[in-house]
Length: 209
Image (cartoon, rainbow, N blue to C red; front, side):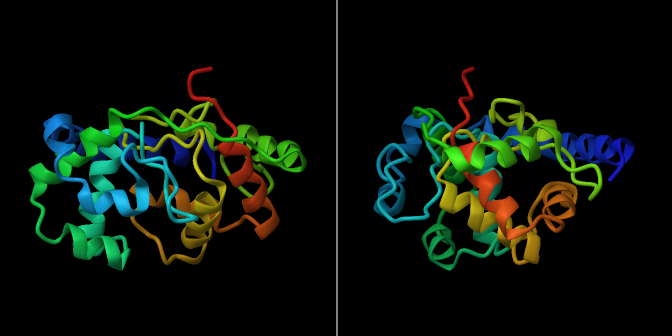
C-alpha cells in the first residue's frame, strides 16, 4: 500500500467518522451509567475489569469508536451474538449514553512481553514496506491513543488476547466493519508471530506519554 492510498483511506475514515462523532457527542455519561447492568457481567463497572478472559477493555475508549461498535454489533455488521441480544432494545440515544459513560472511565494500563518488544515495535512504528503494511501509528498514534475524530480506537493498555483475536478476525475477513477496509488491507499480510508480537506491544503503550 503506497502513501497516497493510505492517506486517501485516512481521509475517507475521517469523513465517515464525522457523523459518528456528532452522534456520539450527544451521549450522556450519567444516563449511560444506569444502562450498563448487562455490560457489567463481562466488562465490569469501569469497563476494564476483565471478568471474562479475552474481553475488550472499554474504559477510557473514544466515545465515537464505542458508539460505532455498539451500532454495528446491534445491526449485525459486527457479529457478537451475546451482545447483539443485549443491545436489541436500546435505541441510538441509549448507545450514545453507554459509549459516553465508558469513555469517561479511566483508561487501562497494560504491559508488553519483553520478547515481543523488538518485532512489535518495528511493525507498529514502521510497518513493513516490502509487504506494503503501513505503520499502525498512522491511525492509532505513536502512543496508542488512537484518533477520536476518525473513530480509530485507542490501543494502549488493551488486553493482548483480545487484540490478537481481533487482528486474526480482520485478517480472515470474519470482522469487516473497519472504515475503508484499512485494517483488512494491512493485517492480511501479517503472520501469526507478527500478530502476537504486535498485540503484546500495543498493550504496553501509554497513551499519556
